Image (cartoon, rainbow, N blue to C red):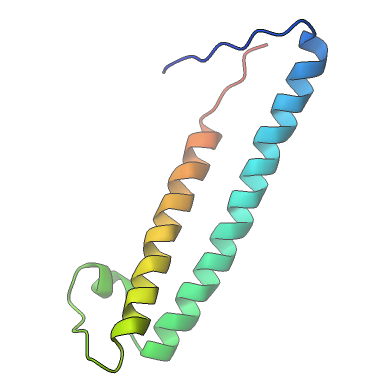
Length: 96
């Protein structure tokens, strides 16, 4: 695990600010994940598509659904990114 060092003249004030910022970001990411999952569910139901099959390239893109399928793929990629970000923050350890 790599370390990042922060220098501050007021350690007692900096630590709570860092903790709060990390926790706030975790909360925002969790909320975004929830909204993105809901959007994926809505699009998948509307399109009658299994998101896993779509990501595997097993869903044909008909001309009438092409843009909607691309939107669903974008939401799936966004979900993966948000989960990666949250996982990174969950592994973060602030040493005091």
